[in-house]
Image (cartoon, rainbow over all chains, first blue to last red; front, side, top):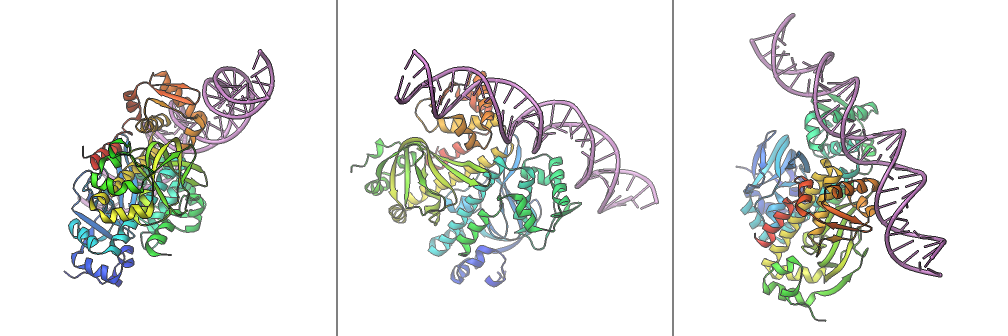
Amino acid sequence: MSQPDQAAVSNRLLRAMSAEDYAGLAPHLVPIELPLGEKLIDINAPVSHLHFMEAGISSITTDGANGKVEVGMVGREGLVGASPVLLGTDRVPHDHFVQMAGEGLRIEAGALVAAMDASTTLRRLLLRYVQTEIVQVRQTAYINAIYSIEARLARWLLMCLDRVDGNELALKHEFLSMMLGVQRSGVTLALQALEGSGRIRGRRMRIVVLDREGLEEVSNGGYGAPEAEYARLIEGT
Amino acid sequence: MSQPDQAAVSNRLLRAMSAEDYAGLAPHLVPIELPLGEKLIDINAPVSHLHFMEAGISSITTDGANGKVEVGMVGREGLVGASPVLLGTDRVPHDHFVQMAGEGLRIEAGALVAAMDASTTLRRLLLRYVQTEIVQVRQTAYINAIYSIEARLARWLLMCLDRVDGNELALKHEFLSMMLGVQRSGVTLALQALEGSGRIRGRRMRIVVLDREGLEEVSNGGYGAPEAEYARLIEGT
DNA sequence: CGCCTTGTGTTCGATTTCGCACGAACAGCA
DNA sequence: TGCTGTTCGTGCGAAATCGAACACAAGGCG
């Protein structure tokens, strides 16, 4: 098995770490396909592996009495399973599944923990990543409390856009409605509003973003702060 | 300055740690009053001190274009400032202030970090606490997306109740409306609904909880999971 | 005791979102 | 080409919530 060179990976965490830290991790990284719907971590099931996302998007969801809603999103900026493994537990009450197909680099939990124990710089980087996850979900809680469907949808599309190549997203309205925790027809109406103002174009199973800045306006401040915090904490910018 | 004995403290983290870990921390703990409204951490300001809450409640809020909403709650089960300091940054884009007056044990960030570097068991405990904060805020994001005002209010009252002695909460409707991100009149109506079903009794500036289990029913599954995860991760139950 | 500030109860129209249903458009497939 | 299942557009009454205003009540203070 040949692991990719650090310069060849897409994952922003792997790219941000020192060459030594990457070299220590690389022998344990196993390239893996991430097909749509693949469960990376089951709710309350032992977390044996983590996944550095290389492409595609994974969702963290809460399943409750009233359905399933997204409470976290991980793409190539992140590491699926980071918070439980780095913070000392082996299971979480949340589902983690592949929401947009892609690839990842899988690593065993034990190997990652060992690498972190051996390198303070690696530990520091990955713990900071966990902090960015916290900032993201606090923002989600805020948004879910007081923003309109249209603003929440705009933020969500932007977050997806940050994690894919190109400006197309392969998504069903029904799936979006579940992620946001709203009615499917509400998603259709919000998308039509965005399309009416020329910010996106919708086709069947596909959303093309035409005006990224327009979406940021619609998101009304809901998008941006967590993303800036990621840049600051992980990439020092 | 005499620090309290471990058996005498109320903070559940301090009580859960080993006697050795507590002994290492104790010389750095400074008892401090926490008056209503005191800011413990300012938004994006350096975090110099952390606070083990002994009594009272601190809120974590996001301030955005559309107002301020609570995105985290810390009482005597917790440590204000844990996530930034333990995860390697010195500031967070959130406000932390005292929402119900009480007391705490203050510690300098540097002293806590040093103690954690010296004890793997202490580090393990406190990182696990951060994980419980994550579980809490993911639940908040979930609830905010799809639960009614009444259910959210019931959950919020229960979370407060867990963090105070007795069954009375000193709260204004206006404050509640800000915490939940809803209209003040909506809070009044929801409280009346809870009072009508005999679960609480409201006076001016004061809410008396009469039927805790009734509130849990109203919260419709919104309350409980994060609390159970705290018990599991911190207290091993 | 009576004023005055603050907190709470109440109302009401506007708006958003829900919840549901049904038809139209599209894509795969025979 | 025609069939079929899926996805999307649409409409509509119901419900929840907003947003704002005003009246009333409680309690502090002079």
